[in-house]
Length: 466
Image 1 (cartoon, rainbow, N blue to C red):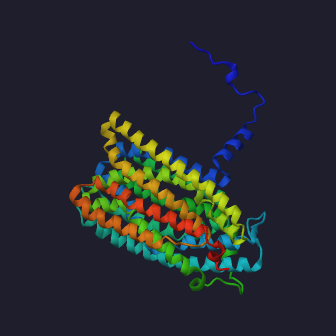
Image 2 (image 1 turned 120 degrees about the vertical axis):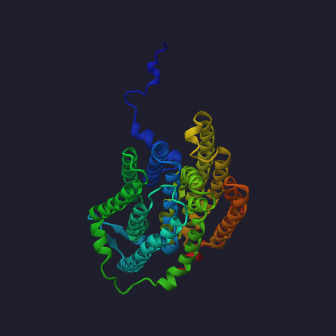
Image 3 (image 1 turned 180 degrees about the horizontal axis):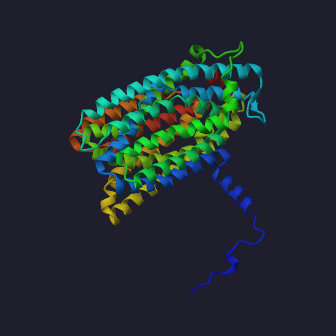
């Protein structure tokens, strides 16, 4: 038997903290990225465990309903209308002149604080009204959608109604998260999401192990609302009280300052619905709940990998926005270039590893692996998302400048995908959907990169309207 040499062990005075810091620097990770990546990695570990539990404890048709529920709830982007991203972007501009004191409240330029209050109160009113509309839309529209098909013995009504109500309540909390991210509390929000993912995983796993079936949606939905409400009340109560006070004379004009940016984001998010959240409901409508479950489970893995890759640039949008507000263009461009290369590179590696792992899984355990799409189909989603990652890093740069030049491109891609899926997959089978997803992203990535190149070579200061 070989005995490991003592020389392979680190010396007694080895500085682990210094080594960790060097590793983070090599990967281009600061605390915010590390915290966000930790959340995505936890989901990447817990996600497959949850999937295995679903394979064991849910019937294929119940799996289809599970993912279709999440997809239909995703229609909230049509009511959200891009307001959250607008809050984050405009908050980051005002936060450039503010800071948090030791008590967790904002201090600094009075006009900036007044404008921040004005923005938040407009957002809070909007989300409160739209939250009520969302609840009615989900309950009524979802009932019509799911009741129009055979239920295959799935008691879906109560889980759907509870899930709809909880989704609407969670929707009303959106302005708080957008404000925190805009005020550069990225690390704190990422830490919350880390623990929220742990709590959500534990809840779902326990319910599946107890054999609750589709009723897992009831308990996971309740916990998904109770946990963030408790967190915001305990952690950010003082900030909430401060920001809800009446603003001063300096206020934000939604029509003049926000709407021109917001409607473009709204168009972007709405069109992406059909390319992401809407995939499972689309598959259920065209091919039934079993295929819906396969597409939902496969695409969940694709989104988890893409979410990790996305972290390198997404979490830095507020800080880049603050730098841009101060005219520090050299710093913005250098930081973005490095982060973008790392983001796309990780996406390529992650998607390749997933397709290979799925191929091996389907060879070793063909029964459980049948809950996923075949590897040949999953490859279409993987290639499409790699192309989308090029587009994503471009969007993150322009959003730091409060520009959204890709709206009509998104609309074109979304409409093309939806039309092609309905026309082709209904005749050629469900295997065409992932490859349609890849095909529509080929020209989109090239066009997006060309738009970005034009923006970076023109005067970026014009985008700030300052």
